[in-house]
Image 1 (spheres, one colour):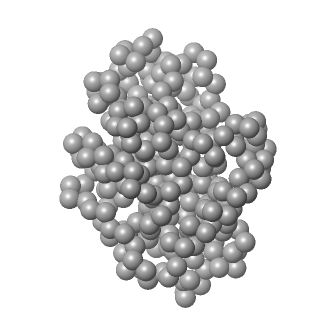
Image 2: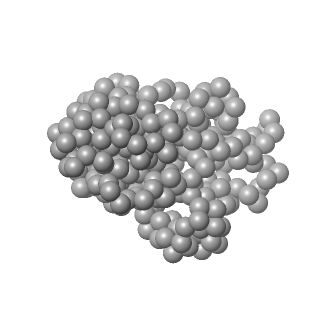
Length: 267
């Protein structure tokens, strides 16, 4: 792998990435796993603090000089469970202000697409700094991502699962993150490393669900269903079509750079 020392892999700290990191653990002599929320990881890659990251899709479409490592992603094809809009307004149509999760890049853009294209809404967007404030009265809707989204009590809210909403809008999977490295970084075997790690993790998904249930204080069955059914880990033709559709919508709304093409890591 990386001849300069350990390969530094940046990944989100959420349950949905654990099948990838499970396989990395047995390579601790070669790999350092660095956890960061989606909004932080691209900066760390840009500053050469990391070699490879799970790049938020919106981050890839806002930058240049990165290549997608084929074969793996963090995606959903319908219900995702961990990207939700909690609506306090009496109906979706009454949403005027939306508080966006500061940890997110992609899901913030996805929220704007869903509200604009599916519900013809253009609310004011603000940033949610403290997720405990979701129970206060300063916004009509709140985007929450990751494990937190699965733990918020839904009573008193209208809840939109944004994976499901996207699937209803487009008929396609939604890709939240792809694996990327800097173009020309010459790290051999990345695609195989990530694919092998994913396959190993999915073999031991029961064990992962057990650990995550303890960590998150959730039922094991719910964790298992999430990892086996809600989250998809491949990057096939349909996922790439979903990514392209996301880019087109995001470009139309001025959320990403023009002229971005899909550059794949060639080993």
